[in-house]
Length: 414
Ligand code: HEM
Image (cartoon, rainbow, N blue to C red; front, side):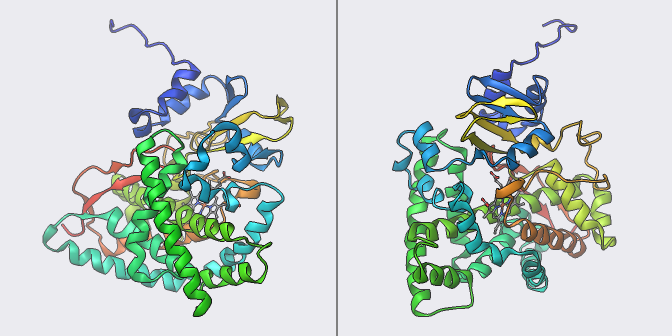
């Protein structure tokens, strides 16, 4: 190619297909812009709409005629999905349910995640974070590299959600590994070997939960597993057995990898732009703004989907029943019509309301918890280790839907 030849802009289909490749997963942002050049909503083919605009994604998430993927949806699109326990288990949870079941399932667990309840956890989470930082200090003695993700970013959310649910402390690392394996099923049918591993992990976790539920029935604790078991035993129409399992599974998996990625990105961006590490240490009101901008700039959940249950419209454009919509939240968060200079990381930007936790009926139940964890973890990390430094470039996990750092080696003292 001569110096002056301009590469042709990718077609919509090419850009979208590239998101499924290892290269696309490493850096999907240029592909989002290529998709945006075809419109804020664009038809991939009849019946398949991709949405990258902020307002369009927001409207779609709030439109009750657009349903999340549920068992009936899988039946229509993915014959054979019932052979996969990792997919089956999630369809009994609120995340994969539509009216009228959705409200019932959300209400059962929702009270435990109400903002006032979550605010009361602050000192507990601070204690957990400090213990993990002590551990990192010990592991990093003499300049030994420590994996910030394995030792801090992923341990804190799993410790918090395990304490809420009532999982024994000694099982937490096992849970973390199982939950990561299971979470690949959110990327769908792409990798059959990964899906098989996810199925095996799901079977092991289901056996574990079944046993734990039985134990709590005999010996109740002050935890969410006991509460949910009581709801089920009191009236299985409020929460069936599979729904109890699905709820536990979704609370564990939705809550921990995502938050781990949020903390990991927050650490990475503050090490790349050291002024922010200083501000996290010095300004007590900076962390909420910083966390909001990480959520916008590097959201842990890049994409979600909906299916039109009946004919509807999106900002006036008709969307026929049966249409599948791919809502790219990470692209909406960089919509130049909504965010000035969207490719610039700026925690001081005004009116910063990214779509990283979704919107509407399925708005993330754990958003107050995830925010609080990151707002506690990041200032404490940089206060405890003022000379924190990367020893190797961070490594991204090879995934698209839930995207974040797999490993990040750091030295805790220079
Ligand atoms: C930074 C961390 C997190 C991110 C980015 C995140 C993102 C999301 C998103 C985008 C949705 C909506 C999906 C959709 O509408 O299709 C969602 C739903 C959900 N999240 Fe989170 N989440 C995070 C942390 C958590 C935590 C800590 C928990 C709980 C312990 C949690 C539990 C849930 C649940 C239960 C739902 C389903 C709500 C419903 O369907 O009504 N998430 N999350």
